[in-house]
Image (tube, rainbow, N blue to C red):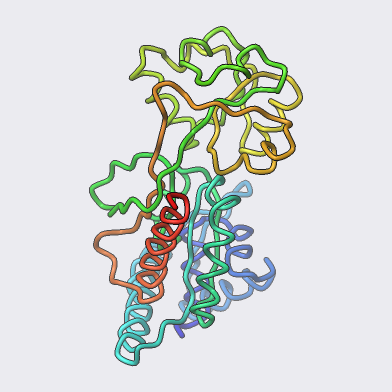
Length: 304
């Protein structure tokens, strides 16, 4: 409902990139540039400095961004308040999720949620846990779902699921026949690791430290950016690793990987993260309530 030019400007100013803004708004880059040029003509002022393929806000741009941020937030609050009065759950819900959650847990959850709330238009943005937290802090998403501990006084965190991480290796590996694997048994083995900023990597690092092993002491043979890349590397004999049980369904069924529990066991929370001070979005609240219900249903099915 807000002026389209202002929405486009706000997105470019937040991302400091015409290309990223075009992707986020599902527009072409020339269309984004045209909207910005119209706004600059309206104010008779340059809003961006463009030098060496980089952009930055001018003094006028900084001032416009301050007001645009408040205007767009007020429009969304008005829309949400009216829908709350009418009982309508609709609109756009932007969700940020870490790679593991987006690829393996969200498809079924979002499918069921969309079936119950067809008027909600869901947009999913995927990053590692660190990137998702930044998106929440920058108001780029309404709610984030991550698998790493969050320590920010500005963000609220609600644990929604619990996940077990498992040691994985090829079927012929020396540790494949053991009932459990201790952390020190991994020290001398080639280890396939997630990248810096990954929630999985951070959680494994903390687990190893609690058990007297430093992450940097691992024999890291390869760093990759997704659970699928880890599984492929382990299947190909590059080393062993530790991954979520949730990502292993196909490989365990085919017998291409062996998974063993760690000793002591390693569990982590999957958490919903959102801004404490942000006005409440009816679509976001509906999604969060639905996610908790979905989690309870999965737990009862697993137990019984």
